Image (cartoon, rainbow, N blue to C red; front, side, top):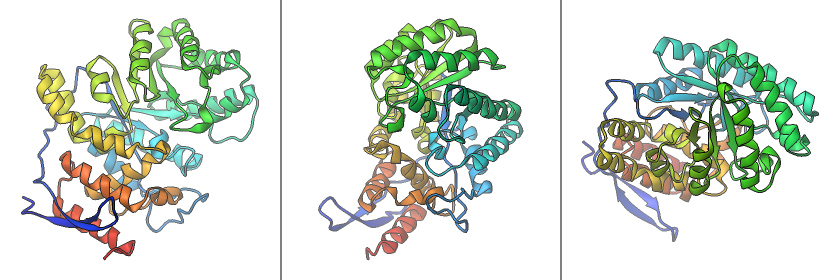
Amino acid sequence: MSDGVSVRLPGADGTLRPYTLREPRTWPRPSAPIASRVAFAAAHVVADPLGDNRPGAPAVVDWEHTLAFRRHLWSYGLGVAEAMDTAQRGMGLDWPATRELIRRSAAEARDAGGRIAAGAGTDHVGQVDVEGVIAAYEEQLEVVEDAGAQVILMASRQLAAVATGPDDYRKVYDRLLAQASAPVILHWLGPMFDPALAGYWGAADVSVAADHVVALIADHAAAVDGIKVSLLDAAFEETLRSRLPVGVRLYTGDDYNYPALIRGSSDALLGIFAAIAPAASAALQALDRGDLAAYDEAFGPTVPLARHVFGEPTYYYKTGIAFLAWLAGLQPGFVMVGGLQSARSLPHLARTFELADAAGLLPDPALAARRMTSLLATYGVA
């Protein structure tokens, strides 16, 4: 029991006020695989606190706690989406560390009996032409397949930079889908997550882009397990889902509107699931039972937290994911590769703390309060 654990937090006006944490909530782990939806949590990496993880330096990863975090996700019945943008692809995690992450996590998944998919992209090359993009994808595709993980074909900054229209996208994906050894997950990440991906699929208008991607999937339906869509537009996602061929999944990547979208038959591949895994698992278990009241009760309080963590600039949400893992006792320190722990302000983190507590996601209130207090002191807040 928390016994009224409290901490002094900065308010919107900059003054400190006492905040008392709620009693910790016990979340049930599933006794059988979650059946109603396929759900992946896109996992972050834990940085080695003694590593030279400054901006621009090669990533130094704390492998013990990084892999332990994945075991935590599997224990709640979630799959792990590995080496995605949540793991700081293109924002601190270089390709050698990514390659090692995929290999280690896939081996851990085999031992734990957990589901894993991993991102294959082009982030290890500089400016290349379309053929160079294909070759870069093929190199990473081989790494993911050799590791034994399902392939997620990540959206490519290099392709977005070099493509002159939808035909270039089609050329790349036709080649890749023709050689994939098992059905892959496509990846549509909007510019709010990565400004370099504006106009992906060859059109600035997302409705026109959707026409291109639906045609691509229709021509390769047997090679496509699904498409992960992160555009933060629920109505657009619902329309796109209705247009997909039978058997092709829509994996919601909408960290604002996921409860309604999953309830409406989207599957899930979400960064916020890394932070709310116990609640997400409870909601999905309730959905398996047909208990929509329990589904809403588990998910509802997580939405304000998710919208805050993914607030603009959205691509800095990774800082909130690592911060919440630290508060929950799932990693020993709040440090990130590339020094990204500095990407959110202290008031933003203090509000994250409050919203996580309100959602029942701080399993040890005394530990969370001590860690928050130590952070405040580090920032010079007495």
